[in-house]
Amino acid sequence: MFEYYNYIKSLHLIFVITWFAGLFYIPRLFVYHIEAAQKPEPEKSILVSQLKLMTSRLWYIITWPSAILASIFAFWLLFIMPFWVEQDWMLVKLGFVVLLYAYHIKCHLIFRELQNDVIKWSSNQMRIWNEGSTIILFAVIFLVILRDALNWIYGVIGIILLSVILMMGIKLYKRIRSRNPKA
Image 1 (cartoon, rainbow, N blue to C red):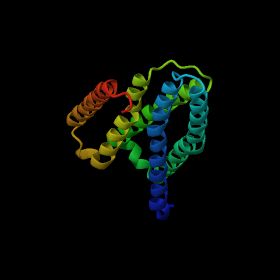
Image 2 (cartoon, helix red, strand yellow; image 1 turned 180 degrees about the vertical axis):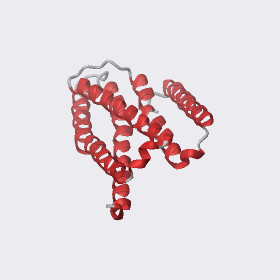
Image 3 (spheres, rainbow, N blue to C red; image 1 turned 90 degrees about the vertical axis):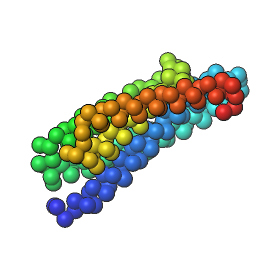
């Protein structure tokens, strides 16, 4: 089974990438949906209908299948290399994967609400929510690449700084957008 390790790892990475692509784009579509719902008719109906279709296709054709396939290949890798579960970096990575699934499921709940024309978030709140998957991605990539060389204190400080920078970027974008609504 070890001779297939690199193929399985490649497939795992491909589906992790497509999963994250879906998680990066779906909140963006949520932002557009929320903003479209505030437009006058007939523009509102046309846009909301199209955005529902786009989010449904993204969610069920790309994002969910990618999450499931990434997980299947991950479990397969752990079956081949069971000693990884004994390593601290892998346990922390698995913690981030649980967090990523929680993020994914919350996105699914938001998706269902929007499909039923229930809007509980502002577009600005959704922009902030959109950064959740980015923070998880940064944490996992650095963790997997650096493994035992990772200084946990610097890693935590780095994630906090990344979060602050992302929030500052969102505030700056909001300020620019308030001056120029077409931005």
